[in-house]
Amino acid sequence: MSQQRSDTNRMDVPAFETDLIDLVDEARSDGVSVAGAYDVRTPRPDEPDYTVEITEVSKRRYPWTERS
Image 1 (tube, rainbow, N blue to C red):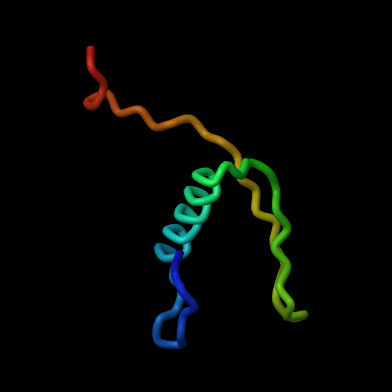
Image 2: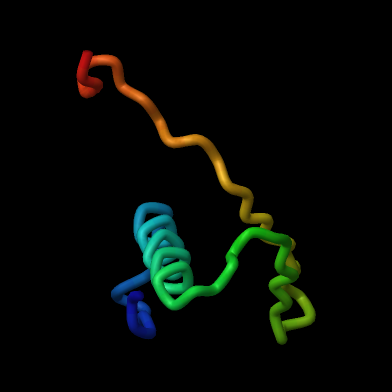
């Protein structure tokens, strides 16, 4: 997962998605069941709080990669 970011190394959407993928992968590798809803609360009263929901989805299947 990414380290603390400075003002010159700000989080963007691709970095957020990569960090989230890495976090879920690391948790699953360590045997953590990640499916569920998680409240993410910020200590800053003027910032919104969020609920993050993780659900299992089917793997994507590409016809050109499947063997007959």
